[in-house]
Length: 483
Image 1 (cartoon, rainbow, N blue to C red):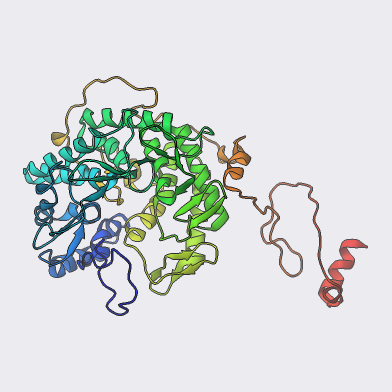
Image 2 (image 1 turned 45 degrees about the horizontal axis):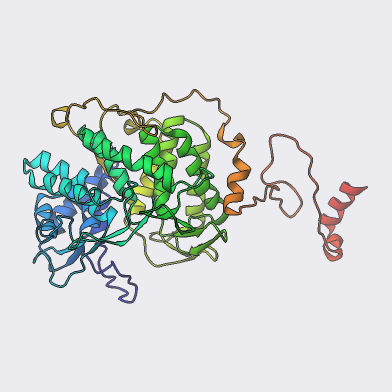
């Protein structure tokens, strides 16, 4: 992805770490510093990028990751990515290129839908700003190459061969491998005003709601792209982003439902495991690399509804990140959400997205939260906006059953959250097998550390052993309670 080798500890490595060595975290975090208002930090970071970053490297990189994290900074980098498209018979790009030598011989021809179909925002803006149409054209061609190979029920698979155009992994979902394709269709419409992208999004979303959405109406399955039959019973952490896309499209009720599932997973584990099996109601891929998608959806839902429940969700996430993942030099990825053991790594999206969305969630008066323009967040959390002179005038087009063009005006809610009292709250908890411990925490003397503001009657078993009762303070409390 561009993180580069861990030079201090060469054994600390995974499959993508060697794909880069170009100061990814520094570049990826630039606009976070700007949003925080840290002018000195931003200027210092920009100066470091100018002095130290050079893309003339004999280094193989992933097209998708470089595009979403870095491309909004460099025309030179865009030119170096073009070989990924030039050697493809289908014009769907190869997943990797060498920054110095172009397309690597013997490179895999298998790429995922999200990797090949989530280029339009960055490539389109690059074309607008440089007056070089190549980037816009190849990103559109890649989208067409994928969309034209959709199934008869308008579903896209997960992995495709860019040489043959055949699907290698024909599983449709809203999660990893497919996720940001849908996000980039609606956001490309918002940013560029091009109705072709909205038309694709409408058809894709309709198919998702009819074929991928579980009958319960709360989560999205992994299904066969050709017939809609169930392919897997797990959901992944990346699919937590989908509620934010639904907010953007104006489908608030379905966004709220989807978000509640991941909210209860977080409550259960103080994080969201990479994969959670809905059949066994247990994690099947245990780690949590500090992903932002759940926080991102929380932010968008608060912006759309102003329901204070989403501020509470943000506080929960922030508290858990501080408690379980904070280390001396930043935040560490969680290796296992059951034991909460940590890994010696912090992905760049922790700074560029997770903390950025938390900051914007709580800073309700931040200028970004009141922008009335065509700006969007990329899938890496970078803000893109264009002057109106670059935006196509939107044309009239037919609305589908599942799509809207603007969110309804935020409801004027009281300080008490409406989401807390939804009648389906218990049902959503049962989906993931979460049984909350609602008894208040007490300290040694029995005083409540988390007092409730409303009175209620509960049956409480006090399990003090005889030895404990002999302790003077406990004996005094015991006598006061029961005599």
